[in-house]
Structure formats: structure tokens, C-alpha cells
Amino acid sequence: MNNYNQIKTIRYMGNKNKLLDFIIPEIKKITKKGEIICDLMSGTGAIAYALKDKYTVYTNDIQYYSYIINKAIIENNEITIDKNTAILDLEKSFLKNQTEKKYNFFEKNFTDTYFSGPQCCEIDSIRYAIDQIKNEYKKDLYLTALMFSMSKCESTSGHFAQYLPKDHKRLVELRKKSIWKEMLIKCDDFNSLVMRDFNNKSFNLDYKELFKRKDFKDVSCVYIDTPYTCEQYSRFYHVLETVTKYDNPKLEFKAKYRTDRFMSNFSLRTKVKQEFKDMLSFLSKENKKVVLSYSTKGLVPIDELEFIFSKTFNHYKLIEKDYKHSTQGKGSINISEVLFIAYN
Ligand SMILES: C[S@@+](CC[C@H](N)C(=O)[O-])C[C@H]1O[C@@H](n2cnc3c(N)ncnc32)[C@H](O)[C@@H]1O
Image (cartoon, rainbow, N blue to C red; front, side, top):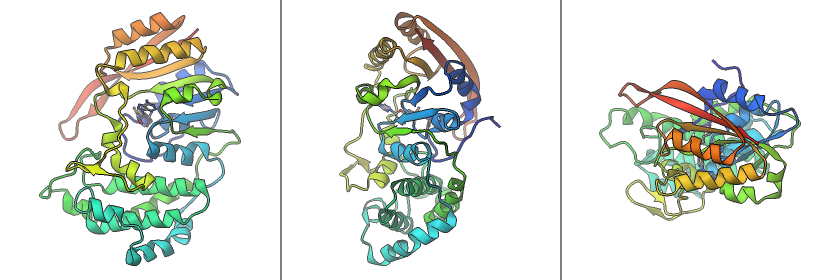
């Protein structure tokens, strides 16, 4: 149990839902009411959501699916949905597409990969129905519920880098699940979203582009949760990028990745250190307070990251928390989550 608001959206590598008790108090210690906090690489928006009841929060992430989730649960301070509104808003168009197949990208390209043919047809039809909705935040909420349902039904080990082989023991059970039914159930969770009278904003930019924006001048504290391994998020979650954009992308390899995947420097061994140096120097020069999460299993050793902080900020401290990280069926390993807190 933790003391902060949270909402489950998608299964996401590195999401901070289990670490809110460790991170949120540290952000609160260095900020005052009325200040704007930016969750610079917000993923599922777990940190921004836990802060949303007390602060104006901005979110940013390079991945479009993350932007949709964050618009739905962070920027949105007006609209809620539930199972009944979902049936009223979507069912007619959903059924229409099942026969007319106006949208069929998933059925054509992903049948018997991450989903069965009927599941792909459900995804296309829900997607078609969502596109008939006018209100943007409502659309974002339904897309988030669809992504949740897809994460629940996907024939994978937890992400979309590859799908399970045909003879895998879990396949029959996973393929029986209905994307539509799971999505409807999820909609009830968005009936009681945290809503406040703050002007929250969500962005979908490389963070360096956000740094150049006027909006960023107003931010006083930046929470940063970079990728810390070699795995690119754009490869692990390409299917979510495709379902939210629904832009008919070119696909490649057996795993059907989009060809236009973003490569983050934080996941490139040769670039990551310089990326940290440049990012932290900029934030220090702009006089921002910084809270940064990293792992003891990250590409950059903690002592090297600490050295970069010592060269860029007047004040910094580092705190550490051990936790057990499950390794899909092979038990668990101990790793530490590290938090740097820095300001001038
Ligand atoms: C560890 S995850 C963040 C998890 C998040 N705190 C949560 O609780 O769900 C790292 C995020 O950084 C994003 N990212 C990587 N490089 C980026 C860049 N250059 N600009 C913006 N976002 C980036 C990824 O898309 C990913 O969502």
C-alpha cells in the first residue's frame, strides 16, 4: 500500500507505481504549493498522477501512446467515463466495423502474432468506434482503456519485442479473452479520476525540444526518469504506438516493428553519459530543481552519475532504496533504486 493516488494504465517497464512512497515525499520537500512540476519522461504518468491533487503538473514523453495516457489522466481535468458511457458511445460503431471492416490494419498485419484474428478485429473495431467520438479527452480515455485491455490480453511475456510461440502453454487462455469486454470493465476505473482546477499540460516531444519551449520557463522542478537499460521503449511498445496513431505504418521483421522507431540516447551505451551531462548542465543553468531516478543496474554506474551531479549543481544528495525485482518466473533479484535530488 502507498499513500498516494495511483491508477493502473498499461504494464510498463520501469513504471514507478511501487516507488511512490520513496519518490513523492522528496519532490514535496523541495517544492512549494503553486510551483509547476514537470515529469519529463512520464511513461504511464504514475508520478504526475500522484502529484496531481496538489500541484500543477506538466508531462512529456517522446512516445505517442504515453502522450495519450498522460492527456487522459493528467491534462484532463474535465471528463470521466465508465462502462455505461462506453457502451453508449462505442457499441454501435464497434459492431458496424465488425461487419463492414472500415478499419482492418490489425487484422491484416497482426493476426496470430500478439493477438488472434478475432482479437485483432475487436481492436480495429474499437479503434474505429473511438475515431467517431468528438471530445478529445474522452477519446484519450477510451484509447487508454483499449491499451490496458491489449496489455492484459497480449500473447507476450509482458511487452511487444516478440510474441509467444504457437505451442506456448498460455496461448489458448490468452486468446480466449475478449479485448472489448476487458476494455469495458476498465472504463469503470476512469469514473473517479483525480480532477483539480490546475492548468496541467501534456507534451509529446524529445525532451530537448521541450527545453526550448516557453512553457518550460514556468517549471520550477523537473522529475526525470530516463530509460536505464539498452532496451528501446519504441521497440518494446511499438504496438501501442501503432494502435494510438493508427497511421498505417511500414512494419519490419517477424515481430512487425514500425520502421520509424525513436532511438533514445539514454539507451545507447556510447551516448548516454554525454546526454546526462548536457541535460543536467542545461537544467542547472536554468536554475531548475531536479529529482532524478536511476537504478544500480543502469548503463551509467551510480558513482559516475554522482560525479556529473557534483560538477553541475551546487547542492545535491543521493538516496537509495532496495527492492526485489521479479525476473519472469526465475524468482527475484535485489536491485536498488537511486534518487538524486539537486538544486542551486
Ligand atoms: C523509465 S520510463 C518512465 C516511466 C514512468 N516514470 C512511469 O512511472 O511510468 C522512461 C521513459 O522515457 C521516455 N523517453 C526516452 N527518451 C526520451 C527522450 N529523448 N525524450 C522524451 N522521452 C523519452 C520513454 O519513452 C519512456 O516512456
